[in-house]
Length: 262
Ligand code: KIV
Image (tube, rainbow, N blue to C red):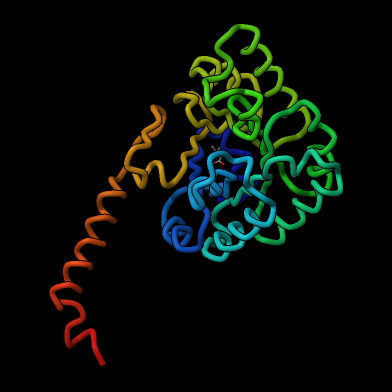
């Protein structure tokens, strides 16, 4: 999938599939699938390094992840780089240095959270030839202001605000919008109102595409089962079983055998 097609998907009605990825190994597998696009999300700092929130992610960390991912992805998939906490709130120069690092590392699109106060930066990035993906609803980088990971836009006034934000992102020239943890009906209204594709996570079925965190849908965390995640694999158990199998064979001197030795 090429970047133009990503933007045109809305007209054709063909859904966009997006998955997060943070490393070369998994990116190599994703590259062999039909998945349309890869998000190198700031969630990587939690998923890969165990941080408690995404506010710990840094530009260097995400750039490093984008590099690893892009080395395994042919140009058949769109790579989105997630601008981390405050990287677009420290002035234009800092924001553009981040965009610079991300695009040079292999990102095709950059994503940033929220709208208020970001308008000038969004326009500047787009004017520099780099597509921008908006992200509204639950914006995890604002966890300290939100007070928790709650569904957003449940009250009428909040739903109206979210719709206005979506329109503004579209008017600013964003190529797409992530809708995170909003009621399905609101996601439907937003999707029908704006001309650009919406990509939902915890936003129900009425969006132009879906994104999930790779390790969530692969069941890599034993106890983490958010309602909006569907597990396509029991990754935790499969990997654990494989490791125990290896351990047993080492302990019993079954591995390595003569064919695995020089
Ligand atoms: O970082 C991330 O994984 C994200 C998705 C939740 C959209 O931003």
